[in-house]
Length: 196
Image 1 (cartoon, rainbow, N blue to C red):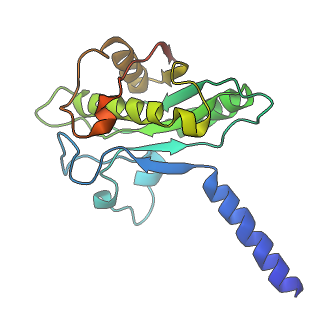
Image 2 (image 1 turned 90 degrees about the vertical axis):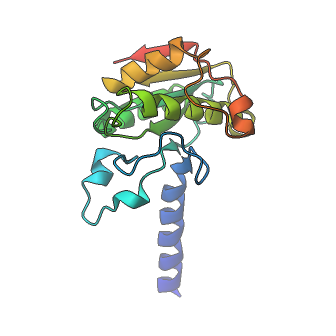
C-alpha cells in the first residue's frame, strides 16, 4: 500500500510539473506560410539533445507558463522572445529569469519559439515575423480564458528577439502573411515593447 501511495504521489508531481508549461503550435497543419525543410522551431537545448529529429520540430510554438498567484495577478501578459541572431533560439536562461520575475510580479508569461535559421531567399526576419504576428493573435485570443487583459499584452526580447519585438510593435498594420483562418481576424498590435 505504501508503495502504491508513493507511486501515485510521484505521478501527481510529474503531471503537475508537466502542466506548468503547455505548448501550443502556432500554425494549423499544412497552413504555415513560407514553410521550409531547412528551418526548425526549437530552443537550443532541444536542438542539441541526443536523438533530436528536425522533422518533428517544424511548427513554431507558444509555451505557456503557470499563471501568477491570484493575489498578485495584475491582468498583464508578456510574450518572451529569445535571441540567437535568427540562427537559433538560445536564451533559455533569460527566458527562465524573465518568467520567474514577471510571474512573481503578477504577469502571465508565454515563451514564443519561432523558426530558425534564417530563411533562404527571403528577408532574414521574414518567417520569424510571420510567426510573431500569428503568435500575438493567439495570445490575444487566449486572454479571457487565461485571465489577462488583451490590451495589456507586451513583448520582451534579447538580440534577434529584441528586433522581432520591435518589428511586432512597429509593423502591426502591415500583414506579414495572408489570412489563413479566423484567428487572423484578430489584430496584431503590441503597445508595450521591451528589449534586453
